[in-house]
Length: 166
Length: 110
Image (cartoon, rainbow over all chains, first blue to last red; front, side, top):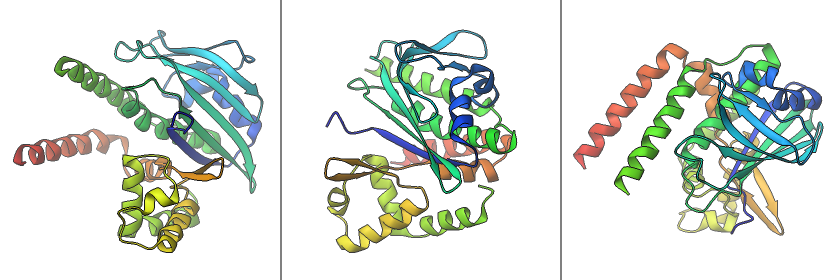
């Protein structure tokens, strides 16, 4: 069924909802834990969302669908890599709740194009971004990004190979 | 994964073949109801329900309500956190190479 979420990720972070919201929307902060990517998503509903790779090119763009700081954020997700830019944008929703002195952050990624090839990259990507966000907010430490680039490159090569076979 | 209590809950949740089978089923098809998970399983509904509660407590299986249905999802984030905790950046590419080699050799044998 189309209204059934495709992916749901949950992480508990010892922080405040305000800090988590800020970390998800301010490019100066995302750059520190999101493997060098500058993610700008602080605008109101209807404004533009962008994510730039460490090299500076726009790797993802979309529209802010909902912004209710510090509780909820949703935007469309439209990667600009060669292998997935032809797909219709999907949707990412962040829910930020206080839970027993911590923050419970839930990410729902859904509304994918029919036959989307994006799943493999996503199921590797979000857990890495979330645990890096947790380390960043709790201890100021961040994960080593090199394997992330390897994973992205590999996903691109696999998608290329699939296309050649098809 | 600095919290020892949380790590204990996670390892206990994973230390059971039936629960790992439930995780595999969710990986194959995310967002299933209890009834869907019970089909073709050699377990009573009560047993599946109990296993799911343990997986949910370990944050491995979050649920989403949709109308009267409760949908179960595989949340790989805690597993990723253990990997981050125990596998350093230098090991990762070597382990990936070994895992690729194992996969290539096993595929060739089929």
